[in-house]
Amino acid sequence: MNTLPQRKLGSTLQQTWPKSRPLIARVPRSSGQVLQPLKGPCIQRSSTGPVHGRSLKCNSTEAAVEAVAPCCKAAAASAAAATAAPVAATLPEAVIYTVVASTAYTALCFIAMALFPRKSAGFFSSVWPFIPLSLAYLALLVFSWSPDTLQIMMPGSLKEGLSGGFNPQFFPRLEGISALFGRLGVTASWVVHVLVINLFAGRWCLLEGLRHGIPTAHSVLLCSVFGPLGLLAHCATKALSTVVPALKAEEEAVTLKSEQGTITILPYSSEPSSS
Image (cartoon, rainbow, N blue to C red):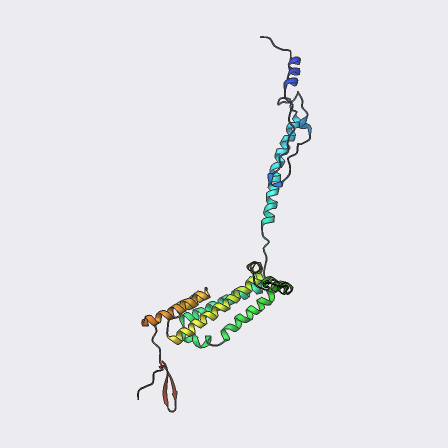
């Protein structure tokens, strides 16, 4: 077998071996950077390297780039997570205690109206049940109010409204209301606002049901969470009681005693008595 001399073989490999391509630095795609060739010792070819003419210095540079790339990816991911994470807002403890106390107070009122309708009717026929909730709502409203609250709630301009044509102003918009509810103070005052409305609806169902002798426990409990649905349930019960008389509860006789005798006040009948 004919063999070429070692020097001739070395020169042949140098002539026929393709030129090495410049190493391209690997960067995360999310960074938006354009891939650039890495200028370094890797572009210099050597015939004495262990891997087809590449030097040890070139291999060490590639290893360094491979080691840096995961670190860049991890740093970019942590930066994106920190940007996307919302900043947790805090409320004063007084605001939190006010909302919790108002919710507990309203729950006790609804339980009393549902379980003891006749005994609690005298208390709920007055305005006293709404005084604590109204004061709590006033305090939370003052706390949550800011100079731009009214402008966000009812955006518009008087000048644009008077400019001519149909251009209504100061109408609430869902975008503004959603922006206001993004503030925790406004949300706290809104919770107490809903509690007052629901309690007023339940109180109306209770007194109206006692006046007409129809059950009110289901409508009162429904008003504790869904005020309008509780009113709807009460109206449906009242309409159904005219068709099904068995739904009406037996009215207890209420009498008034005096020196002249005893007078029956309830049940009241508009029909004239026969003498």
